[in-house]
Length: 329
Image 1 (cartoon, rainbow, N blue to C red):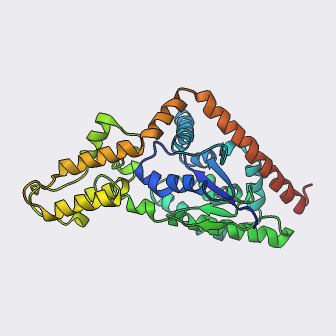
Image 2: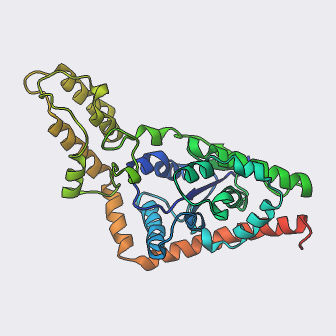
Image 3: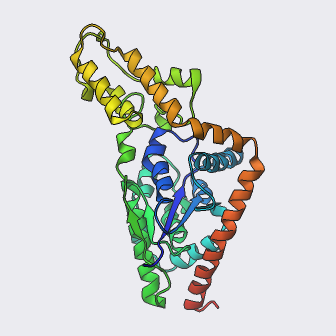
């Protein structure tokens, strides 16, 4: 059976929270257990559609790299690199733009959503799906792990590849979505019960610890009922967090005690303490690894540079194939 190639891009959009971890990062790390090749790029070109602070962008890119490496991305098994280090992607983006209809781009959900939120309608924002298609096609990707909101981008990539291939022959491989755990992000609530988001200020940083974590968990919304009052665990926001970190048997015990109520029943403070302990334990090794990487920035640079070399070799081959097909070589 032919080796599969996995490809995913990661937006450098600030400190990662639990929603990012359970919705995407953990899925990406798990892909390493499957046979095949894996390419993960940090989408700094894409970030320019909204980012106007150079130093913040540089820091965000490094934070993405450190986060993934801390949480288990193995640079020996996966290729991690900066998008902007692969110049061939921008060449492929131009070739694809020459066979892509305006109507296809006008239907892009991300473009309509962002302009509706007041983001300026730049050419870069409008042609964002073309660059994303180039990212996917540049490495002969077979599978693209995405959430439900990103499926359209893969479908648009399929359309662009088909248009190019119809004109010039079988140059680009057709990628498919990998939708494992695609709903996970939607299951992670914010501190207020709404979807977790940095922009809403209701998120929990993955590496939060100690007093800062206690303060953040303390903001999770509860009601004023006393501990002895029986409660339905399925209606309590705290249990939506606890189920992320506790073993099923331990979670069942907490639920049973809360539902029974009476003397000795746990209060919300007890549940929050259990959540803090669960988070501290779950990310303990990752926090240690993160501190090691932060203390050795040169190692992070070396990993990204080695990743770029490996990614560029694949991208050059695909770029040259496309140039020859359309008469530029």
